[in-house]
Length: 195
Image (cartoon, rainbow, N blue to C red; front, side, top):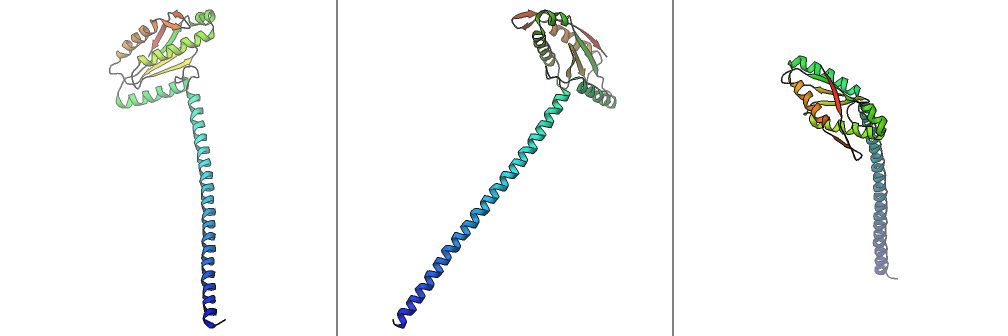
């Protein structure tokens, strides 16, 4: 073999080695990039799982708080939340010299409805009473179920103290409208005390 052929073979071998080395290096870099991408995806999944866990815990905590402060049947605020809102209204009313009113509503003869038609019909009636009371009040007013057939109403910002009597008459009139419960027409009366 002559020197030129040897030099050409050596150069070809060197070039081939360099190309193969570059190909190998590129393959290695792709492999490392793929591994890095897999690691990033795994880390993102872990972070997403942690975030979902925190969101679930926060959601569960909010639900527990809601359940602790609301009546299970009607979804209205319960006695605890009602008392808290009254305390806030009194405090704010004193600072701003704005009168407020609290009403306690008791459904008359509700026990007879429960005894005659059953608790299921009584529960439906309580739900309908709750809705009717809610729709009769303005924004910022509160209706709460205090227990059994007792409801509370808070009017935190009255223009005049006499406005509470007007609202009480409207609530009574709304409750005296017949209710349709399980195919029956029920007439309900209520008593309201006010302070």
